[in-house]
Amino acid sequence: MKVLISLALVVLIAAPAFAEEPPPAAPPQEMSTQDARKLFAASCSWCHGMFGMKAGKGGPKLAGTTLEETAVYTTIVKGRGSMPSFKNTLTDDEIKALAKYIKALPNE
Image 1 (cartoon, rainbow, N blue to C red):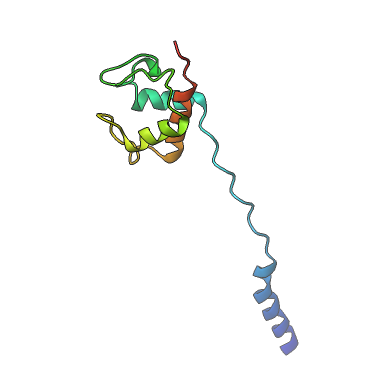
Image 2: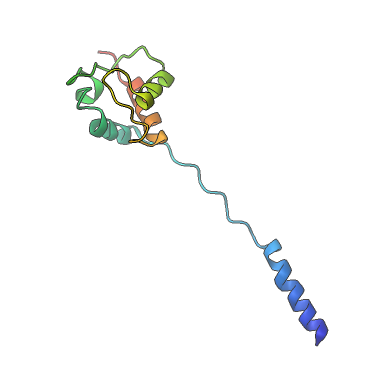
């Protein structure tokens, strides 16, 4: 009987060591262009009109910007001039998606 109890204890103690680990979490999916456009409309279009294609109420046209994507990202995070910082308003992934969206705007 003591042997069975000892064996049961060993199995109970060792079982977690042999348990399967959960699969790794899937990486976050990149925001679609359509979602970035909607985010731009909600957060940026007031000052950068027509989805960035025209100057708005105080902000320049963003289409055709000569800034690199990293500089656009930094501008959104830190703000510039009368443009506020969005670091506490948007997530890092949202800011990255906006920078990518802005750089993809055609120069008219």
